[in-house]
Image (tube, rainbow, N blue to C red; front, side, top):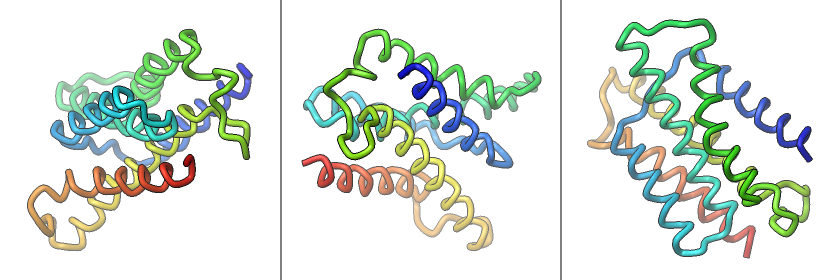
Length: 171
């Protein structure tokens, strides 16, 4: 189980590092994602859905921190790797030791993966691609957003679509 846990984390981080440049998302979006995580746990929503929002929140915080370090001219070797790794480890390690992740009865049956961990990976990927989609659409529209708050709406809408998909898959 520990090797599987470590390999999933390493593969997830490697995929996120494949991006050419860290693009931070806005603080409002980061707070919205964080509120989604807290609300879903409070309401007792399935761990895979909570993981979606947690993964997006962790990625958002990572990109925001990288952008802040860049603005402060703080440079060190493998900065993106270490910042992303630190945020994910700070969130996942306590969940693992509290037996929230890798709980024997909290697995997705078809692929024997932990629901929360799968949600974190999927949420991170969905949020990353939604942020990249916004950058692509903005570039094609002469550097302007198509509508106000598009930068917030695309990632949150993507997460809402994935939440609906995970809801129907888990019920």
